[in-house]
Image 1 (cartoon, rainbow, N blue to C red):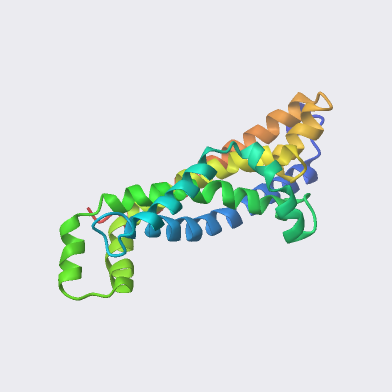
Image 2: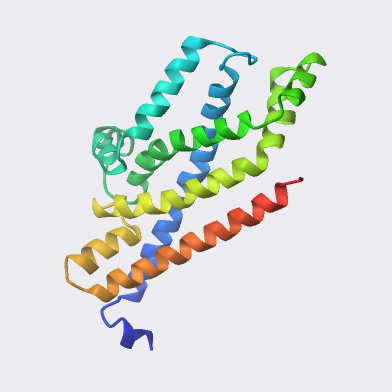
Length: 222
């Protein structure tokens, strides 16, 4: 049945491309969560009236975040080609896409982290500070637990965005479903290959969204 509907699809290539897309998305999502959380915490803690209040540090960090958030992803990939080649020795393949994916997504997620932290009741933070809690204690026992549902919701949105980024990265040879849809589908006028790659991408997105919503609801204690 599938062979009749999609006669030009090479199924082993399709499954390999699917694996490559999931691999790039998973690795970059984990790295983005860690780096974005750290940057978001730094933005929050250095903002006025917070523990590490520092206008200069907050301005510099915020400016860097805004700059990298403003660069279109396809342009960012090109700008990072020298860095990627220096880091990995190549600019092709799934691993070569990871630096651009992480650098492109981490600032976006950092802003979502900052928004989540700002929604925490100030009284809870002040109570912890008045009790003499260390900064590390406030971070791990107050800030992160209180904002956990929003953090997971934010990383879900970011992961979905990263799936789209992997498709764009595929156009310049990073592999994955975007690469397959462009080279084997578009360039060879095989519409069924492009359509199938799109369907698989949609399935991946729906699965990520479902898992993210499930985790968010499980961590929301309200």
